[in-house]
Length: 174
Image 1 (tube, rainbow, N blue to C red):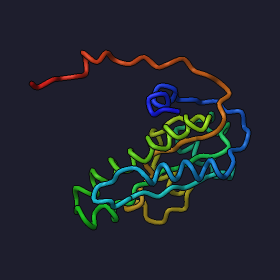
Image 2: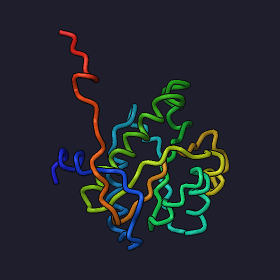
Image 3: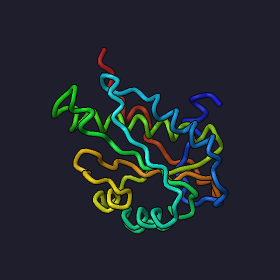
Image 4: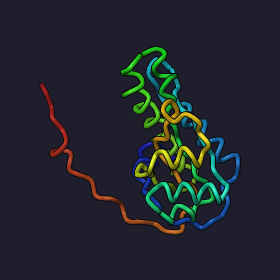
């Protein structure tokens, strides 16, 4: 699949068949994630692969009770390692680069999900402390959950999401 086709085919899916995702596909998603660019090649990310239904339930509760997440056989939680970014870039690394870098890793996962015939939805609305507790992160002041990605085979095909016209969002400075 071309990169543009993956970009155009990627949609947020909130209902999954429940069919398990093969381990080799999860590895491909993680390989894509760790291939994302990062400031100074610091790679300040951690990936929690959650298949345990009890932990998934805690994550869905942390995500403002989004029960649809429980239809996914796996939830990937992407965390930012602030200390790792801070080693090279100080406060700017901890307060900005770590989040930019993890966002790039998330997007790589989402594009790879589309390529592999899977589906996902970027969940960013959640109570961070509850998510960290579910993942047993001891010090979530340095390892911060940034995104939850329920992943599975789609049980729905949502219509394309409308996008703002280029003329509305683009400024050319000639």
